[in-house]
Length: 157
Image 1: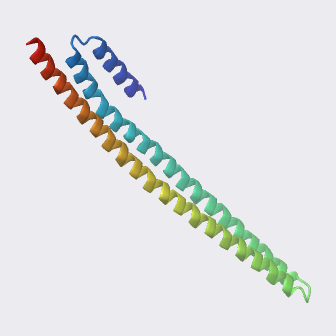
Image 2: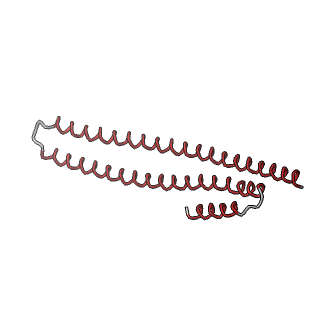
């Protein structure tokens, strides 16, 4: 951000010191494309940091859930050893509930992975579009600058 602000300030100073319209157009042209590309690169970096953080949090959450599920199974198995006769159906129901919870967690985890994958795809598409737009704007500004220079030369010699 400091670099971007410094470059914008430098560009503004150069624009204010321009002596001719064509010089102003050239300055504008030189600033448009790099600024767009830098903004896209910054957005990508922020997304990558966010994505990596999300992955690490997901790993930690999975480890916690897996550990908790394992401890719960062990506790149920210990209870089964000391359970009175006729409690098999309750034990089976508890084990089934644990399995269902594990399956639900896996489904949520897969859905979250799909959302992340879709977000990556959308970010890449947006970054490509922004880069193309910045390149087109830079090209248009360059053409306008050349036209202004030609008109100034033709008009004023």
